[in-house]
Length: 311
Image (cartoon, rainbow, N blue to C red; front, side, top):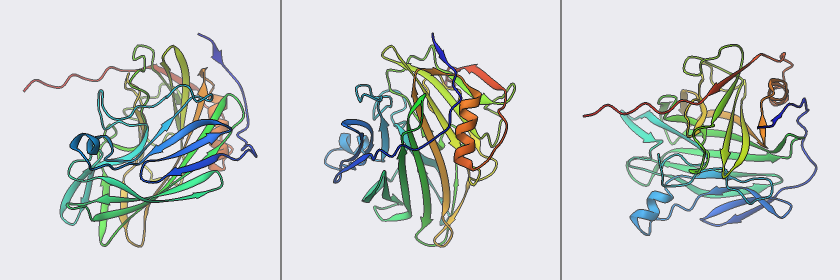
């Protein structure tokens, strides 16, 4: 396997991405004539099956030439794992607990999309006990063309408000936060994770600036890095160890109508196996406005999920 080791500066290309909104279905993001990302947002209630497939928005990511879907949709193992997605399994509000990770008893519904230059904002209702929302969110995605080895940058800025009162957003590292889930065709035997620092244990580490994953789909290898902005809540856990590739950041916090729960992350996508702490740290420094030194690199093979105890 060929490793890529490059020191680079993250710079945005002047090339404009084409943002196409297909109302009540998806938002396509194209670089030239190639679709490189697509927000899925149908929320189709016509049948129970279609409802299950569309109960929350998520973003598919594609290879630079548009031919390979890197991310998973509905179905297969852990059907609620879908592309780039955001959710929390434990939301305390009004004396009740809501699960908007598995989407039990309510959906995340995109009500409007506001497109801009190289960006769009999805306005999302988080439903409560009825179709009426108890939370509203503005989830803005911005797209850049970084220098090599990365071909795509996806930044997500989320602001979640309550309709009234206070909500506490929580869960656990495996069932909450901002996540990336590779395709159902991922080769679980080769999934590898990369962390900043020596002997990093993702089960215990907190507030890592970044984490990366190398995975293979249909014989092709890709690297994805998640950058954790320093303005995000402190004591954020990094969930990056499963062989099927679901990984991301788990923050906790509170939201009110006046003080939103705000999150900011960026994903960088590369074709090939990139194991370069300098490249990852340079990207984070640019994203965070820092000049931190390059750390050592911890490389760990993925873990298999623990078997569920027999009842």
